Structures are given as structure tokens and as C-alpha cells.
Length: 123
Image 1 (cartoon, helix red, strand yellow):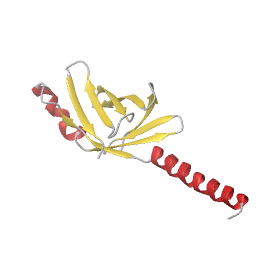
Image 2: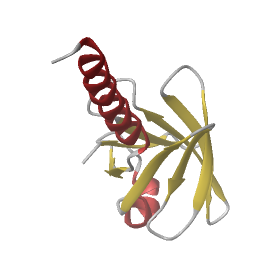
Image 3: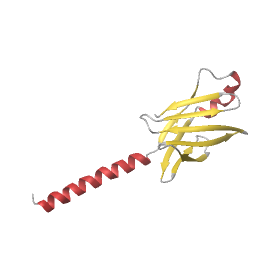
Image 4: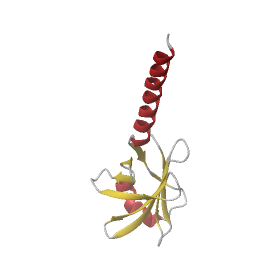
């Protein structure tokens, strides 16, 4: 194989690898959160809504989180591969953190006033 053909073959292979990495970075991740064992009994009122599948999707400038109920929230990134947002359900605000810096990724949901917490590992 000539040096030019080798260079072209290498460039094509490299393009394929980069394309696969880009697709993997923007692939949606599904999470199903479960309550922590320390949740007060008052937290159970949110278990049904929060235990459904939530879809996290990286974007060019952050990420989005879509709940099973159809709520979509934009998430901001800080530090790298850690995304945060606030989600309002029935007049209650929840702090949501998705950490994709490790594998598998995790999703944490917390209601700071009552100490309610839910967590999930990527499916």
C-alpha cells in the first residue's frame, strides 16, 4: 500500500473513531431513581413521580433532563461532566445533579427543606 493510501486509510479510521465518540457523548442516558433509606415518611408523596424513568441527554452547551411526565429542564455543567438543574413538581423544588464523569453515570435528586433524597445509576 502506498504512503498516500495508508494516510487516507488512517484518516478514515480516525474519523470513524471520533464520530463514535461524539455519538457516545450525546447518547441519552436513562435513570430510574429510588428513595434513600433515610427519607422521612413525608417524602413518599413524591416517590411515584420520581421513580419513573428520567432521560438525560448531553447537548453542545450542557444537557437536558426529561421526566416521564414530559417536563424538560436544561442543565448546566460545572465541573466537567457534572450537570445541575432545579425541577419543580407540585410547587416543590428539587435539586437535580447528573454526574457523567464516572461510569456508570449517576443522578441525584434532593428536596433540601425536608431532607428527601433519591438516587439512580444509569441503566
